[in-house]
Image (cartoon, rainbow, N blue to C red; front, side, top):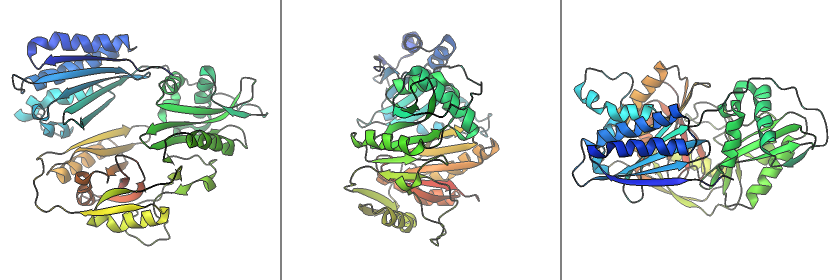
Length: 428
């Protein structure tokens, strides 16, 4: 496993410090393995955000920059006080009027977010605002189709680098667009596992052949798994059992497979959501998400809006999960004016996942803007992940319904608490 490298810079928010900040970002990115072009992108993103925030910050304001190598990516975090960052600018969409003077003044932060592969805004525990800019390394795409491995005596093991690369190529050869996009880049899969953020098990015959495999990543107490991908019969159950054996010795509470393959042994899992046989207006579609409880769930407190309570209670009853439900309602209390949402788009599958960064009074309007913008971009499937472990975020349930979303399933331990996954059902 590669040890994560971290370097840090603390600087006043003053324009004379700009060369130092830009140089820090680019030099760290190159030292951590990004090529010149991607290092420049990361440096320009940090430059844009520093210029933008410096123009509005008070004389005593500072920025702390943390550069981190994640193996297959480099991430730079810019930490500032909340007063230095007007969050409303994060929700401008492509349809914004470019003649709007306010929009032109706010373009710096938008350009910064669009220069990187992933961006998120986080209110840290110490009340700082963290702007996270992540750029992934460039990897060659392997397009050669591999022949199916021969029948043989396969056993389950972690495998080596070359076997991981062979596995990734075989996944694309056998599953095509049904597989996650990262499998198209075998070197990236190796670095993902080497980073420690992902783990893998492979079916090996000891003769250089890979008969299948599974990959999984950690998200707090929840593990998200991919697969099992199998290229010979009779290996799917062995792979699932090996993953469960490894997780039994870990701190994981639960495991989810969002895109299970047809070979997965379903008897090892429960299906999330409500069966279509249960009459409810709240199921918008029925697609399979599988779940496995790994240790006793001792319960938690969740915050649920009244419009969502019936659905959530049915899901908990079906999964036999102990939860203390606190009802939340907007009672005229003050919210910050502007909401901020994060969005992750899979262009290959024409799918987007939204989540809340900051809950504000304009949430419903901003959600409608996102839906409109994503539909114009050809995105046909939209999800929203609502963390009901956060009492303020739970208020979004009514806004989500008004914007055309309906609850699909509850993902235990998916965030700070459980996550209710909504799917866009249409309408305005």
